[in-house]
Amino acid sequence: PPLVSVLSLLLNWSLFANSVHTFDIRISSIALLKAYFNENHGLKKIFIEQEIAQYKLINNTIEDGSDFVLRTNVFETIMDYDPDLKLNPYKLFFATDLLMYLFQSESSVTELRDLARKLNSGNDSAGEEVLSSIQTICELLLTTLSTEDARIPISYLSFLIFWLFEDVKAVDDFLSNRSIVYSLIAFSSQIEDEDVTVKCLITILLGVAYEFSSKESPFPREELYELLTKSI
Image 1 (spheres, rainbow, N blue to C red):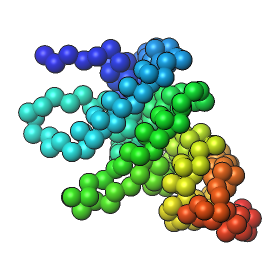
Image 2: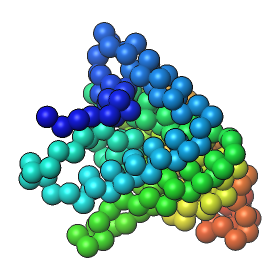
Image 3: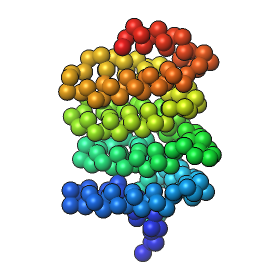
């Protein structure tokens, strides 16, 4: 039988132990992973690089049963569309929570953010649109805004707010697709009162994007300011 590393096992438990009876196991698994990575940039970088390599392998592998691939990957969780995500919304929550821990301020932390930011989704040779990781997450966010379970868009929004804060390159990636900005503004202006948390997070995300944008950004700062002040 194939061997599975302890890290992969802990990650698997945190993402897929989908039962109220095992929720403590999920929390404990994430806590153990954070303790393992605590104040160790080298381990964090190795983990991010391995997750990126595995994500590319998963996306480029034809599943014919010949090779064993453990489908436990933080980038697959946050960057691949999952029609059944509403059955396991905490999978997304724990994946984004772990990445935010890895991305949090410390020496050389921008290196880890840049590794994740440069990851793309989509297969150009197969005729699929190639998007950056941030663009992909934004597109997935838009598909979840109308879902009945607000935990899903809240996880995406919280992660994007965290990532874009003080990260000019991430902000430029976010602003490179104006339709995303327009869609977020349009949704935030029409949702009902019960969705006030999502609306507030959208407003915060747009505010963070404006704060760390520049006149050289794909959506120039002055133009973005005029749009936000007229729309929100």
